[in-house]
Image (cartoon, rainbow, N blue to C red):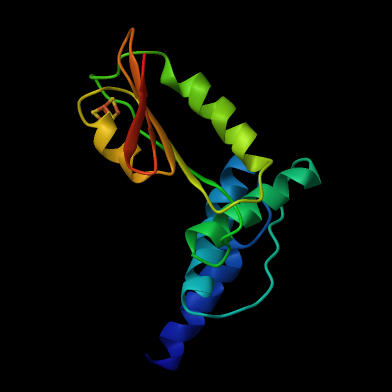
Length: 148
Ligand code: SF4
């Protein structure tokens, strides 16, 4: 890579690492730090948000998790929702995410919105739920563990 290209990439990353609101700052920091971390550059990260300083820690953890640099933290796979969704999944996914943030465990949870594609994803998680309007199927480590 030419020196000029490296220079412009560094300037781009530095621009991304400027503080921002919780929304824009999280996105910019994730891109900027993600590029550096994926290249193996750096051993300490700092995210600056125009928000409660406590909000910066979970953002740092998410960035490290998604760069496979932090294992002792849970992950949540939540379906992006589509026309097949069978129930009001989003508030439940938020509640589960909040609960998981308090744990220091390397586990993956999944919450899926339907019984069509949901069970496939849910089965891959340590604990997963795929639900229809009135029935749900739970999985634990690839095994159906409950239908109700
Ligand atoms: S799991 Fe079901 S509701 Fe969710 S995105 Fe996939 S098909 Fe749509």
